[in-house]
Each structure stands twice: as C-alpha cells, then as structure tokens.
Length: 106
Image: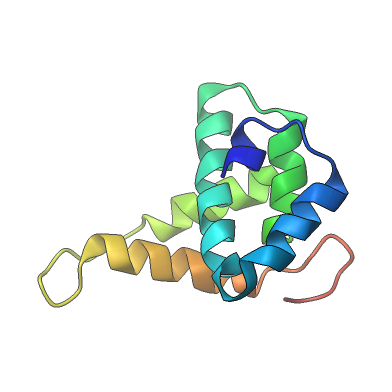
C-alpha cells in the first residue's frame, strides 16, 4: 500500500513488488484499491497511486475506487457472513478479473 499512497518508486519497482508478493498479490491489489479510493475521496490523487493501480490492479485509480464503492453495496453483516470478509472477497474477485492496461486479463 505504501507504493500507492506515498509513491516515489518507478514502474519496475512496483512490478518487482507484485512479483515478490506471489500468491499475496491479489490482497496487495485490494489494499491499493483502498488507497485509490481514499486519495480520490480526499481530492488529492497522486501519480504514484495511478501507477500502483495500473501495475497491481490492472486498472486506473478511478476504476479501482469505483470497485471499492461497488464492493460496499449491500454488505451482509451476520456471524455466518461477516461484512469485512465479504468486502475483501468482492474486491479481490473484481481486481483479479479486471482488464490490465494492455487489455490482458489477470
């Protein structure tokens, strides 16, 4: 999330981070989408957020923020289906199927 919030790194560094994350890359994309939502909501998007979303989520920071909004819609809240888990799972599913900037799917 730091590379998306603070920035200061180039594309190669974010790509290396994604590779190093391995099986955890989808959860890193979820965190990056939340960063994008926060930045956009606060009115202070930065180039590092856009880059991180492009590399880690495969979409723009604006689209990542929209995925966060959609993930919050109609969340359940019961012991058998906790809202937090549902939110995380929705975002992970949306971001792992989002088209990348080059048109490929992840």
